[in-house]
Structures are given as structure tokens and as C-alpha cells.
Length: 247
Image (cartoon, rainbow, N blue to C red; front, side, top):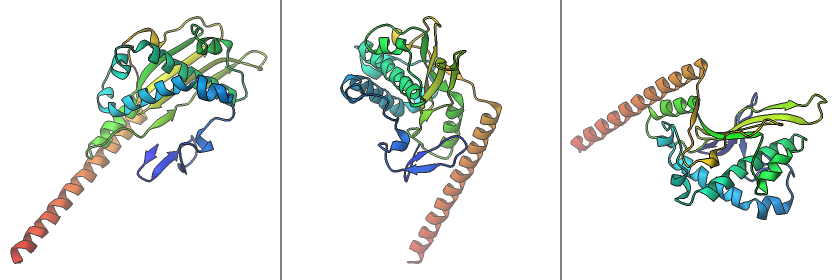
């Protein structure tokens, strides 16, 4: 999360702590890719992701109520290749998570990154309702750009019967409240992928009751702070007018 003072990292069960920059080793994978793959070969994937991230941040307000995303709005009329590169970015990142945990990514990932079809996996966009509700609640305190959150929600992994290799992996990444879920299961067969259509749906991940209560509390606090600010400005303006009258 980006705060007014810089970049912060949060992990489950730990306090937030400051990170010096986005190049810090704390927010980077280990040496999971060779230099050529990390730089030259996967550069188009990274560029497609950067453009996607910029679009999500700049359109966070409208996307927080959206039921779909139009790739032509993100990449223009020739969206097909860029969207496929975006898919390759998420598959590359998922493979890096696996490798960082000590497991070899599945061969079907390599096949897709080299230009083939993706099988045994589903890759689709979603919207995180809990983050949407929190964003709307914070906006009650005044204007707010929802352009600071990025990360991964809890992932799940399954091992094979010998407990030597992965048999499945399911993880959700997010920018603001827009998510992408990558779900891979060995021999699972083809699944839906977002690059096969220009306007894929944004499936809503419903907020839990506790998250709704938290959003309500945030909204009450935001309204209170907004009212306090209005009263302070009114008092300051009144004092300044009184001083001007005396002069």
C-alpha cells in the first residue's frame, strides 16, 4: 500500500512496515527466472500489466461499480495481443510464486508463455466487494483516489499424493478492488480465460458480514471527520471575518 509517507508492506499476522522502494528485496521474488526471461522475453508481459494497472487506478471510481471490463478501453481497438500478454504476465507471476516456494511450475505454463494454448487453468477478473465498500466509506470523508493498494490475497496450494509436487494452485491478485484469479489444477482441463473475449465479466467476491461492519464503521468515522473539518473551517472563517471587522 502507498501511504502519504511512502510504501508499506502488510503480511498476515504482522504489523505494517515501511519499504524503501518498489525495488526492495522484500517485495521481489528470489531468483526464479533467468536474466533473459526476466528482461527481454517477458518485457511485453510486464508492459501489458503496467498499462492495465494504470487503467485500473485511473478508472477506479467507475470500476468499483462495474460488472465487466472492456479490453478495448484499456488497450485500444487492437487489444487482442496486449490482453494475451497480460494473461502471460499473470501466469508468469503465478509460476514465480510456485518456484519461490520450491516447486516447479507446470509444463502447461511454459507451453502458454511460449505461444501455445493454456490448459488446466482458469484466469478471470473479479471485483473485491469488501475493498469497494471500504473505498466508498472512506470517500464519505471527502474526495479520495483509490490508487494505492496492490498485492495478493491468500492463496491455496494442493500437493500430489506423494507430497512431492503441486497438484493445484489458486491465488487472487488485486489492484484497488479489481482482482485476477488464477486457478490451476493438474489435468483439470481447459477453463475460462479473460483474453478470449473483449468484454469479460467482473465476478463479484461478496464481502463477509465482518467486512461489511468494518466498512460501516469506517464510513461513520469518515463522516465524523468530515463534519469536524467543516466546523473548524467555519470557525476559522468566522474568526477571520471578526478580525477584519475590528481592523
